[in-house]
Length: 164
Image 1 (cartoon, rainbow, N blue to C red):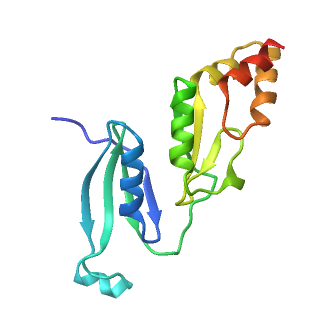
Image 2: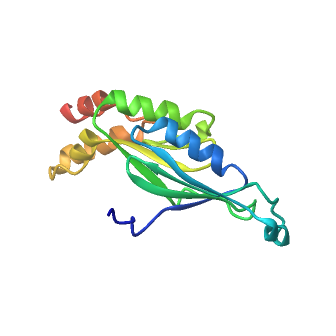
């Protein structure tokens, strides 16, 4: 018997929960939509249309998420984001391109992007995290200086900056 993930990110969408879940599942391998719940007749009391999607549960790389069609009351902010740890520039490029498609170009900075649903993501190469936390102040400072000038992180450019 598998244990249920104890803490699940719960994402509030106006009316794009199913579209967003399918979008994310198509980007990340080992991902799937788990179940979809629909509003019933009692939902008329809160202005929802019976039969429309209420919540979509989905998994991205084994992490469970829930997405709610809750109406326009709340929006995502940059105060919450999801970090995608990448092992190569190829992975950085893939996630940057796919998640950033239709997003806000002006919101792209230092490896952060906002997708077309307004959700913030950090596309971070592990190699750059290693340089930023190397314990050597000069290395960390040069790496941070390079990252602060970038939109999408380029591992080779950060390594060149660290090398001097």
